[in-house]
Length: 181
Image (cartoon, rainbow, N blue to C red; front, side):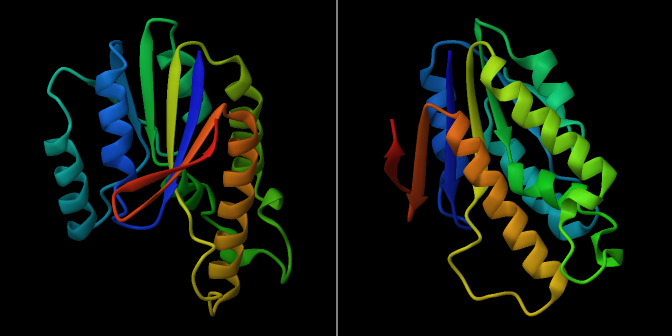
């Protein structure tokens, strides 16, 4: 069993790398997607990702209940790709704009429950699991409290998942840079 986190910026090639590694694993592939097609632009992005995936791969949508979807999908003879943790996090931050100034997202019940469930599950996952996430901490400090909360929680999530994975790779300009393992 191997758990891997692939990090990178927007359009860095991280999803492509995850798909290449899944195809090369020699296992049945199950993809868990977290994006929701809430507008036309996102529908186009989702369609692009769908077109890039081999037809024989199983795809499951889990915009919020990621741990439950992973528990069902992961198996010793399977490679699971989770694409992506950052969109999943954004989905769970619904309602964060009502938090008191300086409060953490752990005050949001769904966020706290789902994040804890995911982090508790990762060490027990069988088979090969590849997580994809955006590295959002390399840019400017967001102007809004909600933007700063999102950036901070994404950084915390990436750190926690990286600590639980045997392998971590950063992708820039389509080039993988191994960080761990």
